[in-house]
Length: 279
Image 1 (tube, one colour):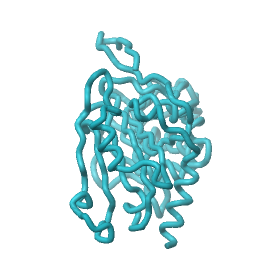
Image 2 (cartoon, helix red, strand yellow):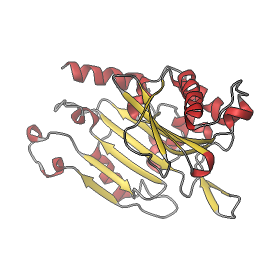
Image 3 (spheres, rainbow, N blue to C red):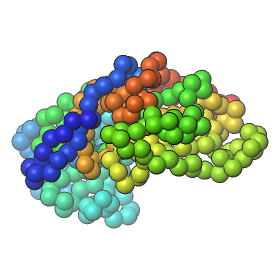
Image 4 (cartoon, rainbow, N blue to C red):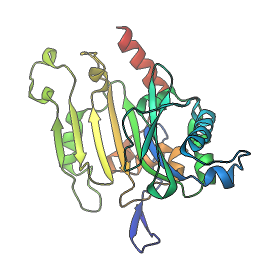
């Protein structure tokens, strides 16, 4: 990573674009913009006076980017320190949330993994264009994942690689953690949800989960493993280019990631999930 200084004089790390292949994909993303975006960038023809007006404007823009918009206001109060929360998706499925009210007149959008899968093809490029033209835009979290459908990698291997220093950056070896009860089972037939190996701290700007995705979805014989990196904008700046080339940022996250090449992508992941559901 490289470093920049923000407006308050704080030193912030920026992940470098490095990696041989762009076979990783975005599995979840959270971003914020200032409400003035709808005034000054899109020049809306109607006046925006209250929250509902801003929500309608945001819904129309999300529909354009993702193929779905805001369907209703949540029954619970706002989260992430905002006053109100609205749900994105359809009548049958929730794909994300929008938080608005307070927080220096910003809006926070959270797109879940289900939402990323449901979004229309090309949403990453459309979101990139939207953010680069928005006022005070910021990606606060993004999860980049890579699938290994044929057992090329596993939680057990990740555990060994961490011990070998292949997840060590800047001479700092992150902690590792075996998650889930399946680590205790010696009999594969008794394993239910698969193994998960976590690397790093959930409170830091970078955290890794390597888990048996196929078993998580219910296929006890599956060897499909997902390698997922969660970036949070705590002491790093998440560049908008992560939307265009997520594989390059995946490749630059840890020494082990530079070794991965292949053709795994989100379309294959969806196909594999459908087949497991069918079985």
